[in-house]
Image (cartoon, rainbow, N blue to C red; front, side):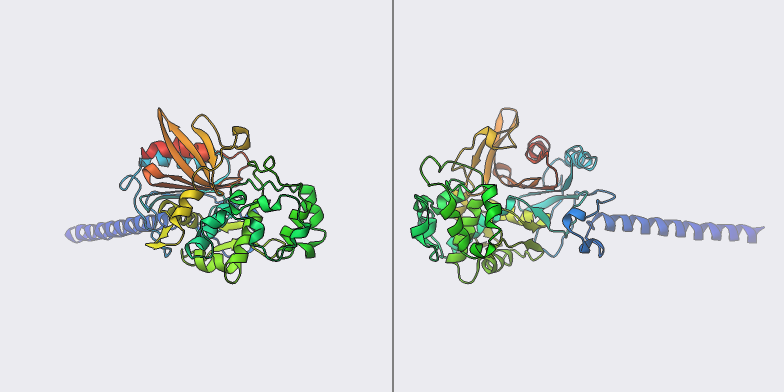
Length: 406
């Protein structure tokens, strides 16, 4: 009897150890997996962004993991923000309350506090960027100024003065009125229609190099004070990219890589060329969400990255604050909580209203939902990516993220 009792006790002990051991392994595995955001699989690496399969389950992390990307991490709630409010927002995003959102990341005081991926979002997938590409072009001009290839005074010089291959005798009247400042603030006055662009592509040899600008400025209506009003267009960033290529050593493409992307540790990206052979100015770059956090941090720190002044601080101030004030009908993000739109050098400005208080914001914006939103008073950087036509990114930031950090 005693022998049987000892045997039962021994078996119970072994079972208990196995159960505890198994439970411990399960907890550890769950904790590990909670800090491993979804990555692109071998099969997914072979398809385009638009063919990327949706995640079966959203990834939501209030304690982002440290990766080899020089982004400092913290903990939501402990280092800033109201954790439950953001987790509730993440659940709503996962349930598609706001449409087809791919990621939401939040950083405060230079620490990434929240990271989440949905649908086509992956931590290592460069997300297509529409007009947010324009903001990166603007910052490349700021880098050229910091290195002395341009000056702040050069912003007021005619674009044609930098483009030595142009035949000025064939340009439309007033072409010399297009300064770098005008082109950067969407006030060039150059008017090229979509139909014209389609026609130009039938003779691509004429669009190589500065021939692209020669073609534009031969076929635009005359440039005047009346035409040089704010008009959101894709041709102005093409002008700016041509100037960048003309003033920096080597090519614009190499300059952007070595003097900006490499400096910031951004190697996982894409940036397509246009027909001229230069990187696309208005769109067609791709950045990971974490790298978008880097761009936002660079601006928030007045052009400094890891203590080095990458972008002229004077340029950052000029570029990211309001120069022109588009009408409400010229924007698509204005609402009861997002007001007073402004535009700088390919950066938007707006106020986010909470109660009786306004918080000023600066943002890079891409159609379909690629946003880098800075709220300086709170040292806050919000990144959203999406592939959603009915984009509500600014409203999400104003109504759901901002209140959680006040």
